[in-house]
Length: 273
Length: 216
Ligand SMILES: [Zn+2]
Image 1 (tube, each protein chain N blue to C red):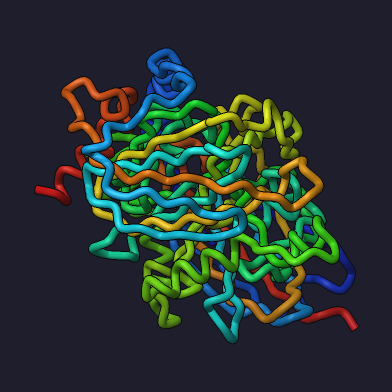
Image 2: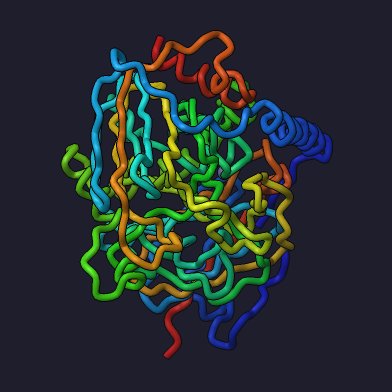
């Protein structure tokens, strides 16, 4: 097997470039980010509200979301985890991509000021508000098997089946279900790589607001996270408010916080031109 | 490149059912039957090998990185890891690993994500997603079938605060993983062409894939 290696000079040039990106990615963004949003959640101007939906514990919902609209996901009635998936409405083969989201922003910790990418290098959501700072983009949702193991003998609903229902009712397929973003799931990794449920079990009105940066179909499932420490299956209702968001200003946090977000929005602009 | 390292008397170069060299930057795909062992070898060391699995008789069942991490209770892949499908079934089990560090959180490189990560000037560089698109299209699949993959030999530490960065791979020439198939699977590989981060030391190199029949 013959193979010519790249020259040490080419490699050194690429390495220097990466290290510059890495330094900016790791050191700049945490300074620019503001921390959690204030509690309690400020009221949304009634005139801008398009729809409000309460998803009962264990259930699913989907909605269209036009670019410039936003959703508030509100744990108004107590702690719950909300699994979220999204597709580009004009081309559902473009969908939420959490591996790119984490990789390009140098973090799995999503919170206010971060953005969520599609598989096409474009921004789907801006996290314009977030009071919990505790979301999970790694572990995925519950399944019939994980619920059966955790709640033996109980009749439960699970996120995998909920998202099949969401996808199929939108004319999509099991193949189209992307990786899941779990809102309100304080999952972190120990140094050795094991997952833990760390920090407070969020409740008491924690909320997240996501602004749509393209026209999308968005699916939700409201089932307990697989690591939820509550041994009983008792997911609380979740309130989702779809509203017309204020137009982003020139210095919009999510659009300017990192060089990566700036380039992502440049890709959006090309699609939307 | 290194010499072959034998992990079992049952698996030698002579009795391999299949033996493939995959050039630097190239894709590959092939079927691994239930009970067979696939060995993916990082022949020159410090290469990232992006890999997907699909159930051979129903491609709608495929590798799921989130199910795999959840079943493991951990973010990294190693000996004993059960490679899980989106339907909750075990596709393969990792039976040997001379490296000790494999990622499944960072996904594949793409022309599109490269523009975001490294600047718009990196758009026209060959990338793993293009390899995957070309390879799965041979099997009647498309872009929507490309899901987050495993990166064998890629080193992506995630800190307790969530910080995540791609650092130099630790694999040496000849390092290998072996996985025994628990169902018939289509294995799709992109031998990563990335030269913007250190997943392969900025120097993509060839790899080798061997497949052996099940042990009686
Ligand atoms: Zn790659």
